Image (cartoon, rainbow, N blue to C red; front, top):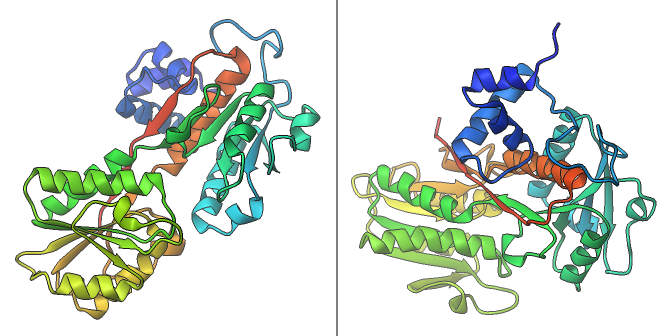
Length: 356
């Protein structure tokens, strides 16, 4: 069986060879739709990118491959905190899958303090690092900056907290909120509710929720926000009015049931993160709102642990973790081989998963 070439991918995807090369290198110059098409073709034909990249090569790396063929997932903070979250476990699983596909080894390490350099970095065992922040560690920015001084780094899920020498790959949270609004609008909803159940301030959820509510208000549709009572801080300083701060999801469902929803005039509800999906779904069902069609529900996230058993099935917005991982690995390889001076924030478009 002949080895699949980059020219074969370009021909099937109906793009130039240079475009395929840019997609492999994580370039921001290629449109999102084209990038997705090229990646899909690469997977379908089993094309594995070579470690060789066009352009000037770093004198610190072998001309045809990474020095070690190994990358690290380094958590800033305690790894145990991260592994308690099913969403992050799913991300790590996809990262392992992506590394296997690219014939890379993956190491797992952590960094709790700027002076505690991971052993895999000290021993020069890795060519680069994917970074994720676990919890709210002290001096996280200093720790990330210190790592980036030693080796190429790409951070996941933190475009708003950038370090000048670190790329970021993350979900386009504005697009998530906009997609949630458009989906519910197309379902006939003319009243809209955003629900966030995070106990602490979470910038991504705020961006999603505000993008959703701003579009409803711009179209002059009644909109309302429910926010969980925060452990630290006050929800009314973060979320727009009209706002109701709640402690139990039952409170949310009971208030929504009083808004005059019906099958002919459904209310569109957007949950900004999936980890409280079962609680909200159960509360809405207890009020008879989902079964009757009086409420249409959209949830940001598609992790089976949280949404796999929900019935009636809500609309789900896939946050694009698989594409985020692929993009971050491609960009990390490019950084390791070419040492570019630019810094990129790579926003990945979400996808709507329709109800069955």
